[in-house]
Image (cartoon, rainbow, N blue to C red; front, side, top):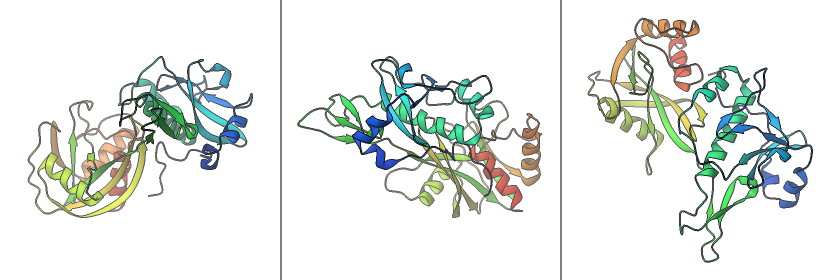
Length: 297
C-alpha cells in the first residue's frame, strides 16, 4: 500500500553502534547536540508547526538523556525528567494537533521519542527485585542497580492486530465508548503470548463481535506511540455475518457497504462524518485500511 503512514519514516539515523559506545555518546553531548522540546509527553511546536529543538543546556539538572540518533553528525536527544510521571496512554489535544501539522519525518521522530520517554518514566524500578534502575545504552536499556540482580530491561513494543473483516462485499466495523459520536473503526486487539498474528485476529474478532474468520492476510503496519504499540493491519473473510457484541469491549458493531465506506472517506476529506458513519482519522491505520479496501475493488 503506497500511502504515507503516520509515525513512520523518521529521517534520524538510529545509530545503534553509537548506543553501545559510551565514549562516542559522550562526544555527541556537545554544544551542537539537539534536545527535543517536550511538555511532559506532549510535543512542543514552533510557530510554523515544526518540532521545537533546544540544546542540552535546556535539560533539567536531574534529567536523564535518551539518545534518539544522529541528524548528520549531530546527536539528537530527548529528556526524561524526574519531576513528572507517565501521562495518559491515549493521544491528547497536543498530540492530535501535532498529527495534523507535522510533516511525516518529524511526526515519526516525535512518536519514537514519546514512546521512549514514557517507557523510561514508567520503569524507574526493576521488575525483578524492585531496586532502582539506571539508563544504559543511550536510553535503549535500563539496568537494575542491585548487585545481586543486575537485570537488564529494554523498551517494549506491544503488537496489536487491527483488521477489516469482509463478508459478501461488506466490511465489519465497530465503535468503542471513547469514540466521537458516529465514528466506527476496524476491530483491534493485543496479540497475546503464545499466538500468531493470524490467531490473534481470529480470537479478537470472535471475542468482540462473535464472528468467525478465515484467510487472514497482512496488509500494512503502523507505529502508534500511545503508549507504544505496533498496529498490524490485516484483512480476513467471514462466512457467517451474524454479530454477537461483547458489550465490555464495544458499543456497537455492524456491517457497512462499499458505498457507505466511500461516502465516509469522502466526508472525512471535508472534515465531516458520512451518512452511515464517521471514518477514523487519516493518521490512523484504520483509515488507510478502509482506503485499501475500497481501492482494491
